Image (cartoon, rainbow, N blue to C red; front, side, top):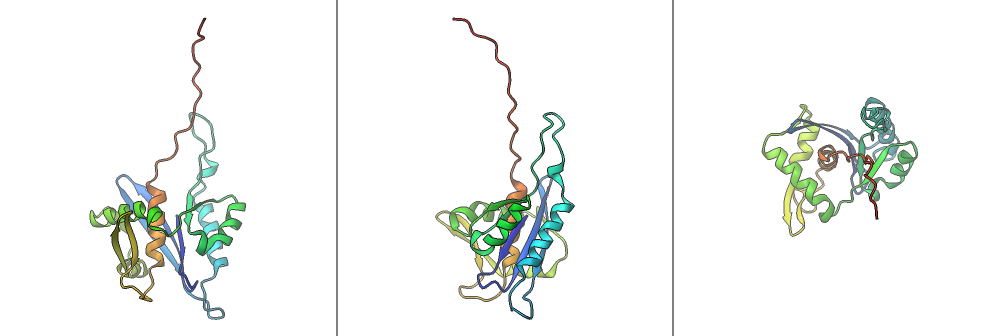
Length: 190
């Protein structure tokens, strides 16, 4: 899952990505500004993320072979935009992963998302808002890899759902860690 908020806090977005074979299915929800504050409600975003955690209770599952608890879904966020809320959610047991909006960190996920889009392996529902946010985004090749940015420098067109989608795709495409299983060794004599 991926989370993003605009720099001014006006918009927020939560994206969900799930790998299905060699394809990735994506859904997104954008949180518009509240009339009272003119900013997206971080409380509404936290409630949605907690609800999603209940929909995907993977951490309650256990590996059949090792009987260890499987890790739940990872929530990728930028500490500058969502840090305080992330700390609250982490205390609630959500697996929060800091994915800052820097070229060195966002380069590989942006490249992966671009590849999935151009090869037709990124599947999305007919969400016009997500489509608009992706259309408002440009992939720029830098010396550190590809990064996503707004279509025009200084543009005010929103792209928070696209950034959240890239973070969600990055989390969905990671291979789960291989559990360590101790193997007994034969005794060695001197």
